[in-house]
Structures are given as structure tokens and as C-alpha cells.
Amino acid sequence: MGWYDADIDRVIITEEELRGKTAELAKQVAADYASVDGLLLVCVLKGAVMFMADFSRELGKVGGPPVELEFMAVSSYGQGTTSSGVVRILKDLDRDIAGKHVIVVEDIVDSGLTLSWLLKYLESRSAKSVDVVALFRKPEAIKVPVPVKYVGFDIPTEFVVGYGLDYSERYREVPYVGILKPEVYQR
Ligand code: 5GP
Ligand code: MG
Ligand code: MG
Image (cartoon, rainbow, N blue to C red):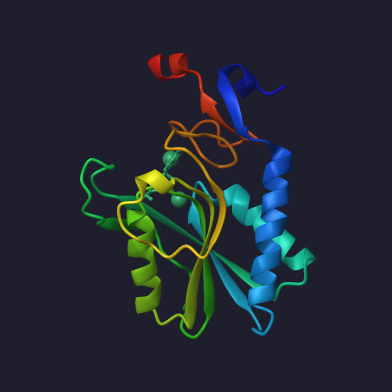
């Protein structure tokens, strides 16, 4: 029992389902990238950090190519109230990605605005190819069509926490994904 269990209204995706889906996604990526000599995984902090850790290890176990891990942190201006899609880089890539096969590792695609900006940015840095693996997608919330090649789960348009996803910087360590009780938001 974690301290957080009492705050969760219902579990949407269990640890077991997360594990199974991560393995499935890793197998697809390993098959599609069988002929490349290396892959650069770009994790979008902080939400995708658990997924990055599990996905990268799974990719190795199922015979994927050698990977390098990079991390970026971005923040969207307007906090969802405006749809400008203007993004500020809080932490940039540490190295040059020119000529590399890149996969963006995302937690969740909501409006798609952040991701759409990020893909343009990575392409402008001359990556050889750029694909996206997103653990979650909210299909009803997509404002801009963004090509996400690998999607774990389509989930309803509700606010979820756990497995890296936060509410006010908390609940990232929750091992499953769930919806908070309404009273949590009144604290
Ligand atoms: P967008 O696709 O709208 O540009 O932004 C997506 C980002 O908003 C995600 O990477 C994630 O950090 C955050 N986000 C979107 N939906 C949820 C959610 O249901 N729960 C949490 N904790 N964060 C979310
Ligand atoms: Mg994200
Ligand atoms: Mg957040």
C-alpha cells in the first residue's frame, strides 16, 4: 500500500498492463528498426521518465539496436488556454542529433501542440528520421494532427496521474495509472 492509494478514485491501467504494453511497443520498434545501427531516444521530461526507463530496457531485451538516451524539458506558453503552440526549451539536448535515427518518447499526447513543435525542432536539427512513441493518447483532445507512429493506450479525455504523470508534481511514483478523487483537487 502506497500513501497515494487512498487518493485514487479508480485505476485506469494496472502495472501489469503497463508492462505488457511496453513490451509490445518495444517489439514493434525493434522490428521496424532492425536494420539501423543505433537509435537515439529523446525523453520529454518529466512525465515520460518512467516510460523511458522501462521502454529502453525492454527494447534491449527484445533485440533492438543499441540506444543512446537524451532528455529534453519544455514548457508550453499559455497553459492550454491559448492554442499558440509556442514552446520554451527548459533543457535542450546535450548533443548533436544530425544524421541520427531519433524516437521521441512521450508520456501522453493531449492537444498534440507540444509534440508538433518538438518534431519540427528535431527535424530542424537534421535528424535522419524522427518517430514518436507515446504511452497514452487522448483521441478527442487532438487539436493538431501529429504523426504518432506508436501508441500504447487510447484513454478518455480525463486527467490521469501515475507512472510519471503528476498532479502538482505529486503522484509520479504511483506504479499504475489512475484518476484522482475529486476531493484531492480541493486541498
Ligand atoms: P499537449 O499534447 O496538450 O501539448 O501536452 C501534453 C502534455 O500535457 C503531456 O506531455 C503531459 O505532460 C500533460 N498532460 C496531458 N494530459 C495529462 C493528464 O491526463 N495527466 C497529466 N498528469 N498530465 C497530462
Ligand atoms: Mg509529455
Ligand atoms: Mg505535469
